[in-house]
Image 1 (cartoon, rainbow, N blue to C red):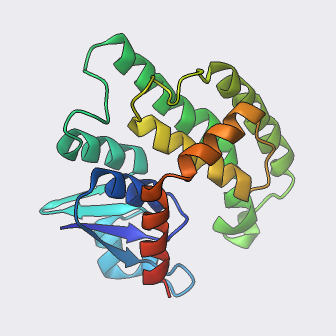
Image 2: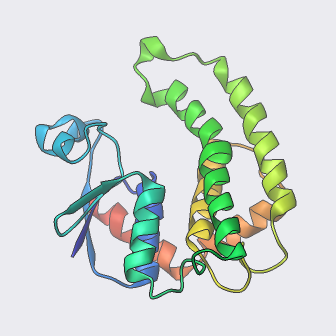
Length: 207
């Protein structure tokens, strides 16, 4: 039984969504930031950063959403969620993973940090203008890269697809303009039954 620590709509959603797609048993531990759950001794023993998501799989404790997704796909994906190592498809998949994390997500998290995550004295609201510019630039490139195929690498959904779709959902929450092809891709991917199951299960645990 894999244990996932997080909140329903945080980066933990990437993990819960993938777990549902993989069809493996998992349980959710809701971390209430307002209550200080992320600052408890027991949680900091799992992740000294005090951030989510975190998974526990047997003796393994793992943080960082992209690393967790890759681990789950490699161990439980039966070869369907990652391209064959050393192939051009694998190289493109790594490129997408890196681009999503460093170019698309980074300005969104900058907005989040300076809106609610950082201590109030450390927030600089004016940084939002630069972050919006960075996101728009990155989104325009992703829009140009997006293939005509159903998924990023063809007919088979991959880890990077969930990562991109979730990041675009996050951008929507931050009220960012999403180019039309990316918006359609976001809507199509987020309509998958596994995503709804993941959100329902984690939201129920947070009640």
